[in-house]
Image 1 (cartoon, rainbow, N blue to C red):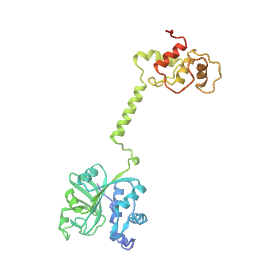
Image 2: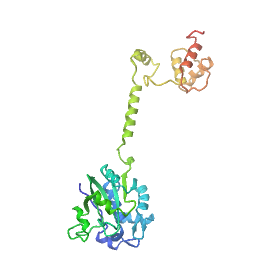
Image 3: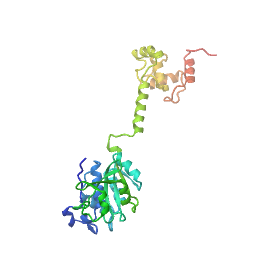
Image 4: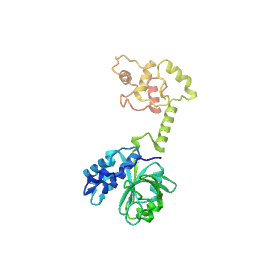
Length: 304
């Protein structure tokens, strides 16, 4: 995969201020975030724009960028999530799952810089990590480099390098947290978690099951639907009291002489006036014992 790296070392940036310094000298924290957002498809932000944002939220500090402050506000502005960690295993798992990260290199193992430096980790295969370095100059990782540890780095193209997770661990060992794991918000994509997929499948299965009429009731259900006693939907759903009264009214079991004002009121009032129901809780469900009482009130079953 090819990467369009955003560099802080563009010649024009030597004269653009970033706090006490310039973008060229001090903007690795902002540039690394620009590279991560670009790789993840979240936003295409220029380094000067991110630097202005960092200053506006108080993330520009003496010596560089307070990355945690920058991420706190940038995550809201650009709609992403992040997690801080110093564990190599979490970094590798995150990269292999399609995420990206900002690595905070220190002073003790000068792999990426002679002093503190932020770079973007954008992919991993096995124990090898692909890194985008915004602070680029000729032969930084070449055989003429003064830093012998940089021979452990493979240069893929300008700004794109590969190195091992072990070397990254050494390079960030004196920084805590060492890594900021950045993810695109799920709300921005059509990706779903396993739990969300299973919930949809379960819901669909329940909806399908609710529409299936058992063999013992198919003939009666079909006849009742044809004559309009029921509408043919949701054969396994429970009836509310007002729905039951409508069915009873359609069957001619209730003397309904009042004009209709809504779909259930006339039938409900007629049933209440006739003493078939007590007039309370019209939207409650009908239990079997309640049904037995109503059938007795209608003289459809004998009294004991």
